[in-house]
Length: 267
Ligand SMILES: C[S@@+](CC[C@H](N)C(=O)[O-])C[C@H]1O[C@@H](n2cnc3c(N)ncnc32)[C@H](O)[C@@H]1O
Image: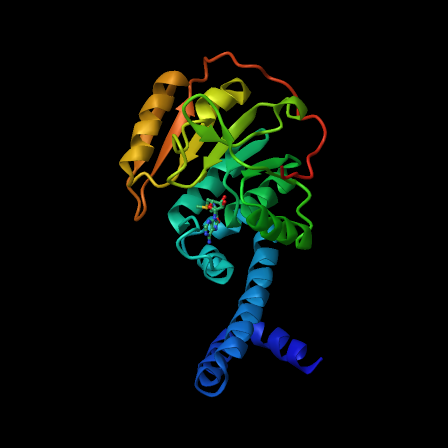
């Protein structure tokens, strides 16, 4: 009980908790320090996530430290979207009228799931790493984010590229926003598969946010999508650049309803 009380109290006095962690750094064995850091970050994350769920839009206020706190407490540095990209994802999701899709799950899945839940929509995320899918899914459950529909399955090889294997037969819907932060670099064809696999499921005017635009491979994929999806594109020269594409509002695509739910599968 005592450690739980201690960490609960420390949420409101993070400077003191940080100071204690610094003292612990000098006195405690490495494994214990690591455990304490993880426990502290977990509590910080859950507290920040509760604030986000209560009012997702407030995290976009210029002075709000909430996104920075979520990023820092989530950890996983090197594999997490940066703040500028997350801001653009949240702003687009808040403006989105339909279900949203994400390629590659993580903190963004939870944030966009919270927005979808507020809108009475669903946020679908495709994930190929089983252990990562479990972490993200558990966190969504802990925060009662029923709008998150996470589908975990291995990448599939198509004609000349590998991509996710979405449950399209159980997935008869069009998406109004796609957040594209996976699959990772090094995948055959990179992220290209979105256009050929999902084109019939992108609503007219669908916004696609492609991360990692500092990479020439991503810029080349955006050029191909622009042609193949009849989309406009804008390079957003943020601290970490990304590309925003908008599928032509005139494009006639299948418009159907979300039908059923998906609890994820692997293999
Ligand atoms: C860039 S990450 C997606 C990050 C997500 N948009 C976020 O905001 O946290 C893309 C993919 O990398 C993989 N991944 C995540 N963390 C990883 C790690 N620490 N090491 C290796 N792969 C990782 C997962 O399969 C994930 O779907």
